[in-house]
Length: 217
Image (cartoon, rainbow, N blue to C red):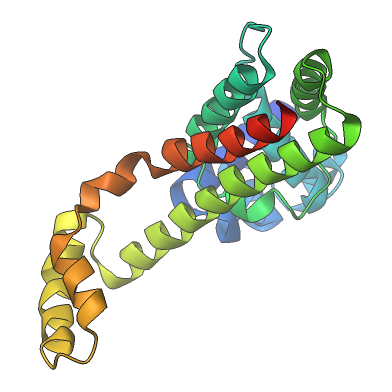
């Protein structure tokens, strides 16, 4: 007889989502993974599929280490945001699900409380704190969703690596640009360094926070 628990169900759901994405999460699929006879057996432990998603999202928030406060709100918000980026890119489904449920789990509330505390201690008003946190979340979670969708696209077309994608798309783009109708795009395409985007989230986050810090000065 299979012994069920909330943690066992959560672990199975996380493993499925990490391997196959958000759309693979169904109560039937999770029930199969944990050896339950029917999906209804899970409801006693997680309430509903929404309840399971709540647990999944909060589990990711629980993986994010809160930095030791430095006394500088910009530094702490940036450090926390980069820790968040590392966590959510380890769970590519997160960007797709984060805005489908209110994030009120204990780990999420611990995260939000830390962030608002460092902003308050840094002299940031509640309204400006709302703007900063909304902008940072939009940046991090939006970038995470972009990564997830690109990963799914690459899987669909069978080009999981940069080299394979370049091999497939390169000749097509060369043919499209050969007619000379899109000269600025062609110059950029042949001159830019693709590797410059590997740290783009970090770079653009820094620019974003520089702007807010300048307004606070």
